[in-house]
Image 1 (cartoon, rainbow, N blue to C red):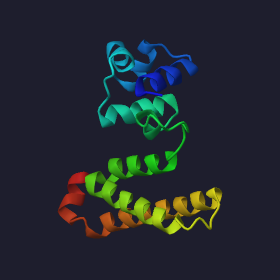
Image 2 (cartoon, rainbow, N blue to C red; image 1 turned 30 degrees about the vertical axis):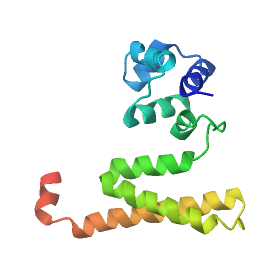
Image 3 (cartoon, one colour; image 1 turned 180 degrees about the vertical axis):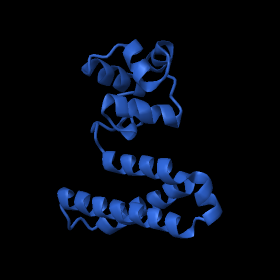
Image 4 (tube, rainbow, N blue to C red; image 1 turned 180 degrees about the horizontal axis):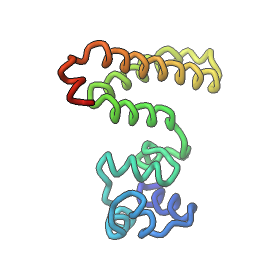
Length: 147
């Protein structure tokens, strides 16, 4: 299924009009129409907002072979939070954790639920470590400006 078809199906499944979806995402109804009819793809920030509004993952929307609407949801949320909280370098670090965890799980010895639990634990450790590093290494002058 194409991006446009997936977008239409997800929108109509939620009972949303193009106008309503546009308001949720922060774009015009004309933009939603263009995505659905003109084979045009959104930029990354809008794609993320579309996926969130439609309760699907961005990878589902963009990959024509993907049929699982929730595949990689935890990873996408993790990367989004890392990007929001810690910028580009934080997102890169988060992607490295995903890549390393993928290699760790490649043997297939853990069931999916256990893999999710391990990944959630890694996520918590990553964000705690980043927050502690920010506290410890942010210059006092910058801390005063932020307050």
